[in-house]
Length: 138
Image 1 (cartoon, rainbow, N blue to C red):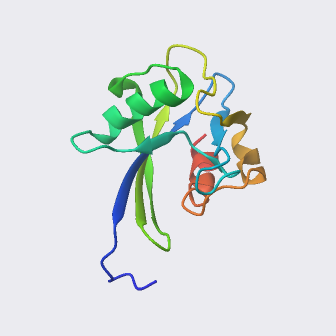
Image 2: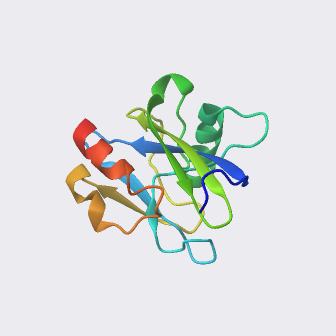
Image 3: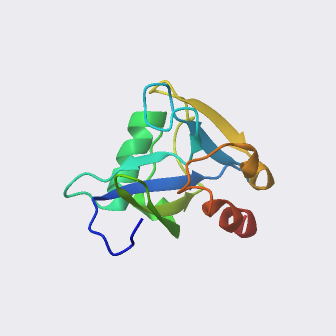
């Protein structure tokens, strides 16, 4: 793809939820969604008028039934990836503090993965470059 071509940019906010044992939560995209079966860091689209942090707090509540706060979201990195029909821009945050126990509310499967095992989970192309950074950081 020509990097200078105008394309639709989609802003998505994602999080590395890190438990007390240093594991990272991954969610498997359910059947019927694009890239179904692939594992990703929880999050979702940033709606008009939302900051990435507000979008992430909303998505975590909707998708996993947990609550966190902007003060608990530490900016970690970002992904910028050109798919065939859109360009994904994804700020990624680290979060170690939330209320509730993550549980799948939208048909997805969840897995707590050790950083060194993240490559064992097939992921969308935008998420793959995040793995070494998370492994090194954790």
